[in-house]
Image (cartoon, rainbow over all chains, first blue to last red; front, top):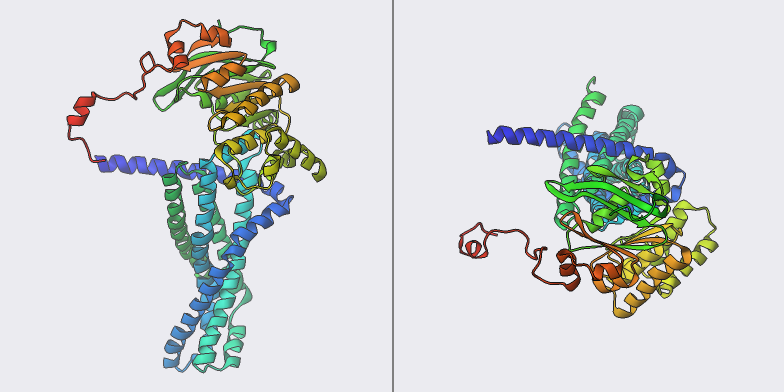
Amino acid sequence: MDFIENLGSGTRAGFNKLGRGTHFLIQIFSGVISVLLRPRLLLKQMYSVGVMSFLIITISGLFVGMVLGLQGYYTLSDFGAEETLGVMVAASLVRELGPVVSALLFAGRAGSALTAEIGLMKATEQLSGMEMMAIDPVKRIVTPRFLAGLISMPLLAGLFSAVGIMGGQIVGCGLLGVDEGAYWAQMQSNIDFYDDIINGVIKSIVFGFVTSWIALFEGYDSIPTSEGVSRATTRTVVNSAFTILGLDFILTALMFGDH
Amino acid sequence: MNNRISDQDNLVSVRDLTFSRGNKKIFDDISLDFQRGKVTAIMGPSGTGKTTMLKLIGGQLFPDKGTVFVDGQNVHKLRRADLYTLRKRLGMLFQSGALLTDMSVFDNVAFPLREHTQLPESMIRTLVLMKLQAVGLRGASQLMPNELSGGMARRVALARAIALDPMMIMYDEPFTGQDPISMGVLVHLIKSLNNILGLTSIIVSHDVHDTMAIADYIYVLSGGKIVGQGSPKEIQESDSEWVQQFMTGAADGPVHFHYPAKDYIDDLMSSGKRY
């Protein structure tokens, strides 16, 4: 009986939270125009959300590209097809690894920071203080961070893929002797702008949307204590990871399912 | 008993208010009036819902029953935009200060001015420095909130609360953590803001001595009810045992020091659960 009771209350709590999250998202959207009219608010958040994630994305992208170059070379050379290494590295990155891994890193680096920041603002009554000053905290604090996440994510994913392709080239061409001309030429002729690059960008926009939404909502909905904020931060990373990977499967099936 | 003056004289009227948190009734059908241009204090032991009352007046919480009128407007029936328009005319000093931690003292005080007015930066600077001078912290304008003591943070919050020249200020425990010098200045400041600018003030405090010194009218709350009300003199002379216990700080009386619990000896002797 306990199990059924827990299942029921858990499901109810889940739907309740989904409803609060959706309401929160509508509130975020209602502030978009006022934020766009004050671009400095957005730029400041793009710096802390996007620019501050630059280093982790660049270094991770480089190593992922280098590993892809190495693994790809060993597999392709068995079939005498090492000249197609560029295509393999680029396709893997722009279609999958760029959007997915950069979104996972973004959730860990920027998402957790957003949750902790908003949660602590709630715990220290800063959000209540704003409300009493007749300033909507969702419009003033949350919407700029949401838009910054939404805009930064595809840029970071693009950076991740670009650096990764260079990492693949360093290992493939520089260390393992793949012809540099073949590496780039094969990539140029086989990677399609719409099918590969644009689909990858769409994925990263979707991931940026859900990661920012989850991170900001968890912070805003957190219990205003140290433990509450800590749990909310953990939930942000875990829920973002599940959502990113689940959505990646759905988006991949929709985008590349007819090939 | 509660309609001590006509409604036009009251800036805030709380009528038949009931508010609960979970199963606990914080307010049980109480009515209070806050007269224009006066300092009204809400006093009472910890946990009696004094801060909750300020949040109900500011429209941040909704009552289970009853109404709150501020300047003739039913706060809980207002549309969001109208509530925000009303809040621009209210200042609130939070217990923690609630300063924005990513902004300097100057920017914190300038924050409501920048958000709600189109004033040029030079005028904002003048106004901010005047407000900071009033609370004695003009020299700290470039400090960040983490460089301030608790008392200083509350004084900055007060400067921010008066930045838009509100018609009413709600002070949540303004005297806590203040040294005797700052306390004296603060008491004088609250009184002079009332007298010179004609503000209405609501002070939530359990600091008996200083609150009695500046309040024109006092409500003493306990157990969800008003257990005493009147001028400081009337409160001092009250024969209510609730009021007397609070004023004298006696451990014995109708207000229990201990949170409800089972018998002390039984509790010590039982194996209990591991904490």
